Amino acid sequence: MFDLPVTERAERKAATGFRNFLLDQGFNMAQFSVYYRLLSGKDAAASMEQKIQAGVPSRGSVHILTITDKQYETMRVFQGKRRGTPEKAYQLSLF
Image 1 (cartoon, rainbow, N blue to C red):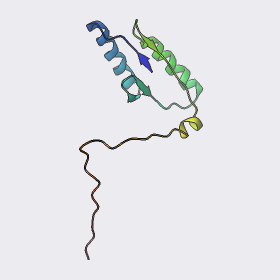
Image 2: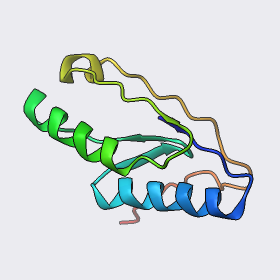
Image 3: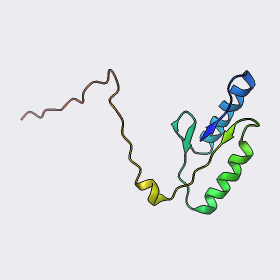
């Protein structure tokens, strides 16, 4: 999770560069400033943390939250309907 300043052009460029860096490292975007990646163990997480620390822009803040696979399993996601999305059509079979 991160909060990077985007007031000046150079700050926007740095924030975009950081987002692209995360994508290049295999992260997925959950929200605009929240990215996640599944890793296989503490050593992999520590290695990724070092890469992220090296890629952080000079201004702003980055927070890393590590959760176990058991904790991830309990996550629930709820999504509302999007406007203009048609209802799912049912297919009929004729004999």
